[in-house]
Amino acid sequence: MVANPLIFGIIPSLVWLTFFMLEDRKKPEPTRMVLYVFIAGGLSTALAAIPELYFQQLFTAWGIVASSPIFLFLFALIEELAKFLAVYIVVKKSKFFDEWTDGMIYMITAALGFAAVENALNLIGTDFIVQVTIVRGIGATLLHALSSALVGFYWMRRRVPEGLFFAAILHGVFNFLILKLPGIEVYASLLLLLAAIIVFHDFEILKHRDQLKSVSLRKKQKRLE
Image (cartoon, rainbow, N blue to C red; front, side, top):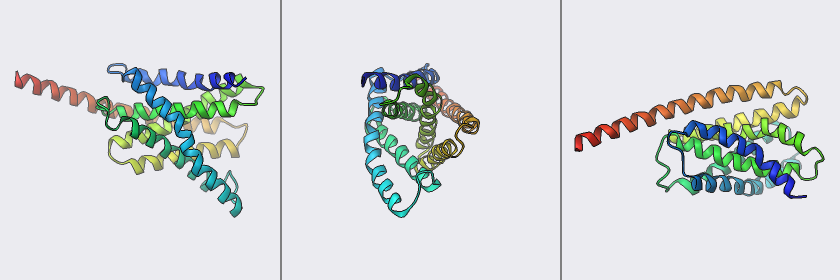
């Protein structure tokens, strides 16, 4: 049944989305905007697939294997760029794109939409749907969220290329560890733990800026009264 991969593919993304939204609970984004961005992130898998297929054929012709660092970095960069473009198109002119933390929240949301589609595709044809869902939910799904969160952080600081670079490094290194050290997921897990620490630290930096902005606006309103 096609429904099973779709349902199980989306479950890890919804779990992580709920978790990350708790970081934005004081002034949450409208549900419809979150839905639009989530769907846009899912659709960005098609945007990423076109150049990925092209470079896969090109690298195969050149004798470059799929587990090589340059292959993994390029594919990670393509996916991070596709997710960013999806978010940019949907939220750039939105009145709900008005806080420092919004860039990270929306990028994480799109990344989880991307991961949901990717998970569903990986579940098609497998007899171990639950097991694969758990593994990808802990690994690949979280990886997408953390990588794109980095892009969102640097986006808010007007340094998108730098964010895309660091996100692609994290994404590529994780995939490299999984491919080169199968059965020893502890190294990949430690990488995600380190990335999570960095991302939540970045969240706090932007949340502090939002707080300063809010205080400044209140003071300005009092002066006008």
